[in-house]
Length: 105
Image (cartoon, rainbow, N blue to C red):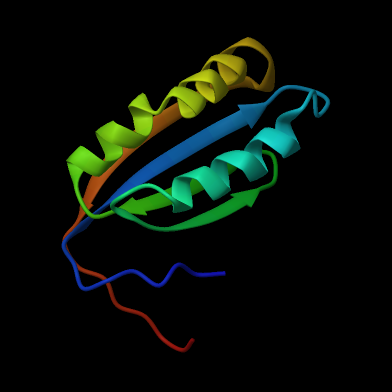
């Protein structure tokens, strides 16, 4: 599903990853983090796709909201597990969305 974001500007966090083999608790933590993110002030939505490379983009009202999410205790634990057992590599990019447009939906 395409996230319904507000009028720009707003911010996007692009998380690109390559997973390790096996689930090892990943799916349950992924679901929990999605639900927790939705409860954070400044959260606007998420889009995610995975094939050989996973790309998850979360949308936020401000850089402060992004910093607060990164510092969330449960999210910090998930980040630690990600480095230890779920990802062989990842990259995070934070962008300001200056303009958006679309078609349909």
